[in-house]
Length: 346
Ligand code: SAM
Ligand code: SF4
Ligand code: SF4
Image (tube, rainbow, N blue to C red; front, side, top):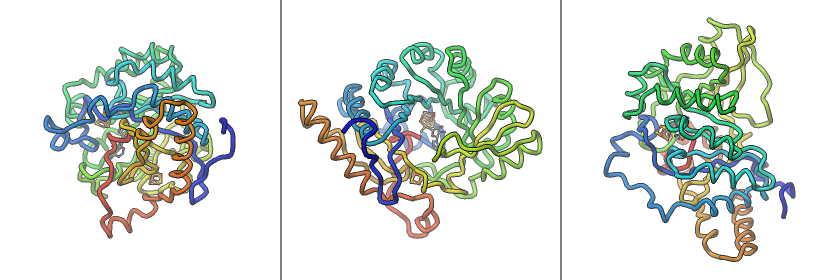
C-alpha cells in the first residue's frame, strides 16, 4: 500500500489522520496536573534508553501510519527537547512521503537553544505550554527551578526562527491559574500568538482530578468577551479539536478545547505512540499495543513494513474508544487504571 491508498477506519467510521509521537517519558518540569512530584519523584523509574524507540524505528512506524492515512505528526513527550538530536528526528519524519505537517508541543524551556535548528530541519509548527504569566505562580505550578523567563525566551526565539503564529496551550484550573486567563490572552494578542484554553482533563490516575477544578470553556469565552469582542469562526479542518473565535478588532484569534464540557470523540482521528513504542488509540486508554516488538522482529525492510501495516490496520480497525462521551458513566463504574499523559504525550 502507498500513501493515499484506502483509508483505514475504526468501528465508528473514524479515519486515522494524526499521530502524536512521544519521544521521551522524562520531563524537566513537574506540573502538578501532569507529573506530580509525589509520584514522579527521585524514586520514579523512567524507561531505560534501550527501551526507547530509536529515531530509525520511530520513522519506520511513522511511515506505516502514513500508509494507513496519517498526514499530520506531532512530536511530544514528556518534554521532547530533552531527547538528544531531536532536529535529526524532525528531518527524518518530515522526509517520509505523505507527511504534510510536522509539529512540536513543548514546555518551551529549551526552545531558545533549539528553535533555529528545528526550523532548518523542517519543523512546521510549534505549540508552547504556558499556564500563567505570573513568575511565582509559574514556579509553583511547574514545580521546577526553570524560570518563566526561560519559557518566554523560548517563545521569542521560536517566533524569530519563523514559527509564526505560535500556539500557546493554557490548561485552566479553578483556584489555580484561572485568574490569569485575560493576562495570557492579552500577551498572545500583543505578540501575534494563538492561545488555546484547555479544560483540565482526568488523564491518568495521579493528578487527583476533580470535576470542580474544571473551568468550562463557555466561562472562558464569556470572560474574554466581556473585555474584547469575539465571534466564532469555522474550524480550519474537519475534526479540529479547538473551537475558534476571532477578535473583531483584528488582533487574531483564540481557541477553546472543551474535552470535558463538550466531548468530541466522534471526530477523533488521532493515535498516540509512546516513547517505548506502544500505540494508544485514546488519551484515556489503559493499555497500548506494542509496536516495538513488531519493528524489532525483522531486519528485512519489506517484512517489517508489512508487519507494521497489519498491526496498525488491526488495532485501528478494532478501535471503539469514546471515553469522554462516556465519562460520567465511567466515573460511576470506576474504570481500570489509565495511562499517564507524560507517557503518551498530550
Ligand atoms: N512537555 C510538553 C508540554 O508541556 O508542552 C509536551 C507534553 S505535555 C503532556 C502536552 C500538553 O498536555 C501540555 O500542553 C499540557 O499542558 C497538557 N496536559 C497535561 N496534563 C493535562 C491534563 N490533565 N489536562 C489537560 N491538559 C493536560
Ligand atoms: Fe512536563 Fe509537559 Fe507534563 Fe508539564 S505538562 S510535567 S512540562 S510533560
Ligand atoms: Fe479521542 Fe479518547 Fe479523547 Fe474521545 S476521549 S476525543 S476517543 S482521545
